Amino acid sequence: MRPGSEAELAQAIRDADGPLSLRGGGTRGPLPEGTAITTAGLTGITLHDPAALTLVARAGTPVEEIEAALAETNQRLAFEPMDHRALLGSTGTPTIGGVVAANVSGPRRVLVGAARDHLLGLRFVDGEGTIVKNGGRVMKNVTGYDLARLVAGSRGALGAITEVALKVLPGTESCASLVARGLDDAAAVRAMSAALGTPFEVTGAAHDPHAADGPRTVLRIEGFAASVAYRAKALIEALAPHGAWEIEDDRETVRAAWRGIRDVAAFHGTTGDVWRVSARPSEAAEIAARADADQVFYDWGGGLVWLRLPEGTDLRARLGRYDGHATLVRAAPETHARLHTLQPEPPALQALTRGLRDKFDPRGILAA
Image (cartoon, rainbow, N blue to C red; front, side, top):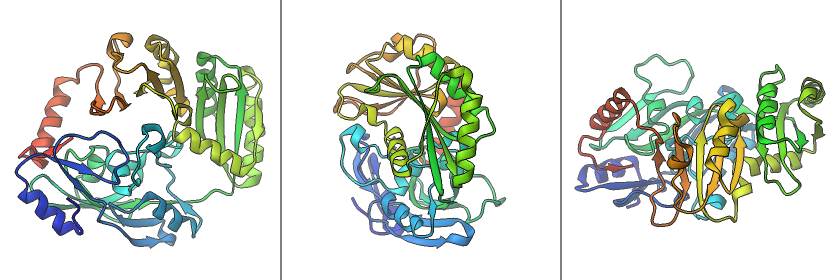
């Protein structure tokens, strides 16, 4: 089903007598079983106020269209949502509703926050077909519960997003990468953590131990050209105990490299299961070692560890005791890629999750 309006979507959900599999632009690979219903027919930017740094768009609006409109006024989605298509080998078109529903964010999250942190408000249709509006178009909003941030990242479990209002930020004049080669995983995580602890506003930190030219650790600085130049040199001095660093400052080259980091380009064209593991940076290298993965990639200063393992690998058995979360991002076609908790959630959290599902989807028709 492809409703052409919010009202049609609400009616379709009210009329449903079985599970519904919500979809955006069709980029995320295997989805839950159920009648497919997509928000791709709900398109268009309904408001862009450059002076107020605000944009409102319907859920099915392609991310590419939004980024192009923002670029015309030198603005951007600061949380730089990842494009999953090359990693998953999928097609389709990334949509802003899908980005918010999955809270898709990129390396800049380490400084500016995730997609949900830029969400001013949204409209969605719950499991009973009721249209719900929450939030507004300004950051200061005290109109009630912050359902918008609750729905962000719920992957359609609480409702189908139909419209989002986002805070956008000005574009950057200049950018540069600081690169160190040859650091082992533990040393790289220490260096990235040290860099993120400085006052020099590092907007990305990643480490690829399997880079073609050997282990490669990269830090990003953005802003006005003079500021970027000053901070890059100061950061090199601050990181002297953590190896030798070089500055790469060709704007297009740096931006292309960070798009690759955003999209985990190191894993493109590979086979096997891909897991995204949340970790404390201090534990990242140990977790990667215990996973004994075929390939590892560290993002967000080591707070996010990407692992590529042989198909069907029991990651729980390899990691043993682990208190965080891991997402099976890419798996065999017959496997439903979904959130896996490697340790059971506390009973209180399980009860809260059930309560939310019962409230927003009492019929249990929103497969997620």
